[in-house]
Image (cartoon, rainbow, N blue to C red; front, top):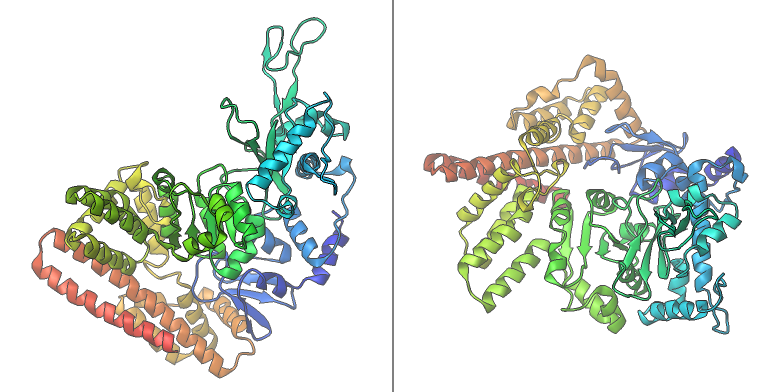
Length: 629
């Protein structure tokens, strides 16, 4: 790719506009600031410099230009970022000669050509006649194309949707795509690398499934098309480039898989790709929630009905990578999986991971026997009503269990079901206040004593240190669950490095920078008061070697800011730091109280309850002050 193309894009797109389209920014003197999208923080430490056309985060040291930002945020390579930014800037990308293409570029190219081939097979002329590729064997192709088109239209898709999402059709023939691509100069090696063709297994007298042999009767190494007789759904990377396919069989004879997906390749990793993400990401950010469905047809119908913030976990379980990608844009997740109980239970681990990431997870309750696609086809208003009625995942599961118990009362069974299907979700909530809230809700709804529920939570935590897999040990360590003692220690170390000891708290770092810059005694005294309450006064010490760097950071951040705005920012930093200090102390106090209750230590319980009540009051007063301010 020529450097002039890159420069043209940089000339047309400012760093402020590009970054501002992904995250909320605000003016800070000659620069702009924001909360860093690459690490968790409450106080902005991410700065954008229009004069340098670059960004830098004082919290995690991420830096770069518009291309590195898009690469890191979208999780794409340079060419992916180039495609995204070129389209936005209206700059055409001039491809170099095929012989000098990089391997990745070559692989993208063969997939693009294959996608065009599949699309062409499904084309209709204005008169309604098929425009598909003519079969090399002759006969039958026309009816197959008609069946593919009829299937898609019968499911409710419009021709606009079919075209927009580049749906296609793969002929039932064994080598039609392969021969077409070879005729355009693509090698069998590249086709195999991206999962378009498979190597036939040699058998005596010929090739498995094809009966091909050479003149001497010995089997040759031959290839055949992976996708045959299927409706083709291209899968895209975040920049909109095709990286793989999902093929839905058209003539289901019960002998082949209903859906066939591309294997993992140098371009495609199913654990990282969400179907529709390339189109949904901007509306997820705008609407501040993502809508998750199970398959391609559910997604296409949801987008067609106006919910363009929908993504699908197509052909694979929802992974931690998927959740991190979604949480980076919005912490609100709405799940609309099939209504059957088995479907709802299939992703227990994933949904617990989402909660432990701090996401707000809601479940959409669908009518029995329906999926999003069938419901939208029947009545799109019913679909919208289901979305409006979505419930927090804990309330959702609790409601199912209570309703089942109402029909067939069995107190012991209800208690066991709550222990198995609801408490694991409560356990992974990162906030002690949230956990206490839901424990009270569960107790009120089921008459299970709070003490019993608390003890069960303790058991789940103990089991997590012994179980590597299974219901009670399913949360990944980095999302706050423990699977063994070494993981537990590592997670504890992480906590001590961050909010546990508060040494790396962004507000604390910023306040120390202000002290280094202004020698502000009033800020120092306020900070001392907050840290003293948690026994953390030593964190205020500024290393002489770091003082100059901190002063420069504050100067960059607050350059040109009025004294009034600086004062307001300092107050906000102090409030946020104090809020997290209190929350941390409250969490530790409640944990100690649970242990004291378990040990029947009444005296200790009284002292800890008084301490917790006081901390709750302090937190409530501070949060009211924050809202009013």
